Image (cartoon, rainbow, N blue to C red; front, side, top):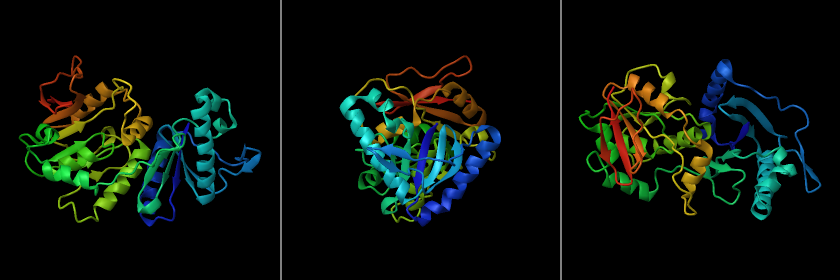
Length: 323
């Protein structure tokens, strides 16, 4: 299994929602999850020097495809050191050399580390050691300017979701991701409930929304991030609209990929249950389901899934389905 390491850095804000992570893990364990034992020798020989990579680690359990650990300063330093050497090995000799090395015994593709440096949660992939951690910061000037320039009529997403919907209507963002579209919908005066099933992304988004709630720059009701999971387990008031932005396969390889989207895709991967997810959304929503698609891609369709209309978003398109 992939591993997720949480380095809380004595951060009080991080501790506020660590219990929610534990509860989600316990729920997963009660249904269908495997918890591993970290007792015994968990050290690794690196360059002839033994490092205790899990000497101050606590296993919370497993969620999805990840084992989740809370690590202290010593373990974090050891992880970063080994990851840097493994990353250099891959760069110089290729991935196969890494798989045959001692590093592969305790670092895997997709292993992630979340730290709370400078009071913000940042996610790193261990084997991408040279990349800066991915941090969600809604207070960035460029993002705040987009919110100010946008709005219910100017943002194609807001037009697709909020057309004919009153202010304060309940809207689900079924795949919140980095939270940007949840914020656009909240700024357009929707009551937004956001869902995210990938634990590393949920953690950094939770942290970003907690920080945004204390900011003077957002004079509107922020999205409410639900407990880790999907709309499939939701029990409560039915939303008028559900917005769904699935992760489709990359259309082409490019050397110029934004850091946040590169790391995001590495963690999320491709959504393989898109049609089933749309069916669930159509059962829940009372007005419509809006699905984001590349502008040149065919709409998602099946015998029981037929697009009613779409809103052009330039490089993307918002396909609308009626229950």
